[in-house]
Amino acid sequence: YIYMKKRRDFGRYCNFDDVEPKIIGEVQEDLTRGDMYIEQTVLNCTLDNIPQWSEHSVNTARVQMKSRVMLHVEGGWPKEVDYTEAQDTMKWRKRLEKDPSFVTAVKGLCKTTVACIEQNNTIDLFEHYFFGEEPEHLPESLNLRTIALFKDPADEKRSVTKIGWHPEGPTKLVGSYSNLRFQRMTDEMPMASFIWDISERNAPLTELRSTSPLVCCQYNHKNVDFLLGGCYNGILNYYDLRKGPTPVGKSAVEVSHYDPVYDVVWLQSKTGTECASVSSDGRLLFWDVRNMAKVADECVLTDGGKENPKTLGGVSLEWMQEAGPTKYLVGTEHGIVISCNKRPKKDVEVGAWFGAEERGGYGRHFGPVYACKRNPFHPKFFL
Image 1 (tube, rainbow, N blue to C red):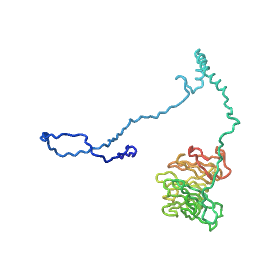
Image 2 (cartoon, rainbow, N blue to C red):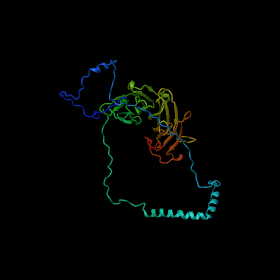
Image 3 (cartoon, one colour):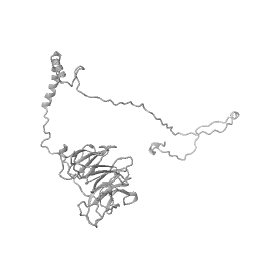
Image 4 (cartoon, rainbow, N blue to C red):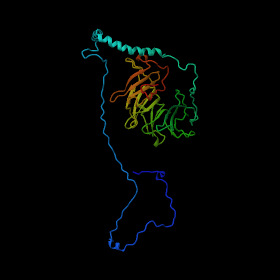
């Protein structure tokens, strides 16, 4: 170890001056002492005034802990009385009420209870405190202002359909550009999407090339160089930013979506290569970007009808590790939010229909659910 010490802890420095010699002590010459002189071998001795430091490690005794389960039920009954049977408890109450000590015990308890009741009656629980007084500080109204503007370099007007922030911080973002209006895309409309740097607003940092406009995109949280994009033609593009702006992998046409891919998410896995996509064709597809020639798993989004199930098109997808690695929320075009469950070695099944009145739900939207997000502190709640 190296022990550091500040200069001010050394004390004041020494100041030496030149002075005249001064005799402090004198020893008289004694010739008889010369016979007592004995020659000795030379010895080397090293002296210092450095304080000695030592290090000790102590391992404290481990505290033994146990987890025990306790079941709380209705107590206060004797062992011979079954508290789940109403007749047995009624017989015990009647027999107890005839006991003289019961009346005495109730009277003693009433004295304490009456004092608490009178105290509650004295205080007005619904009284308006500080009524009519003006507060010293009023909450300020929230407002927003534009601090940066990232303009599409293309001449033709396109919409930003999805924004994905860089996982390592708010320094970069990826935006997917496309025109979702049916058959409104011209032949001159560019297909590229862009990655922007927050500090550089004049020109995009990187261009993402594609044969079809990207509708959604997302960074990989495990490897920030991997990026996933869903195209308007239903194909999924897989980018490795270290290898350039062109996709290093694409999903096969025969297994891809039939409609635009509206949302994609990266899933939690050991390899960090698994993902999921949803489209308005009514399918939730699971992929492994190492082999995009086939689908890893598939779930058809239906309304749950037994005879003639109706397919519901998905336009938003939400997945959160804290809510459960096998649970997915899908917002549909019909205003219903579907909860899907993907169990190992089993088919993906639809577990709940939020908003479907025929399935016991309430609060259905009258339009598509374009966004669905869970509460990060309470994952069971979502907007």
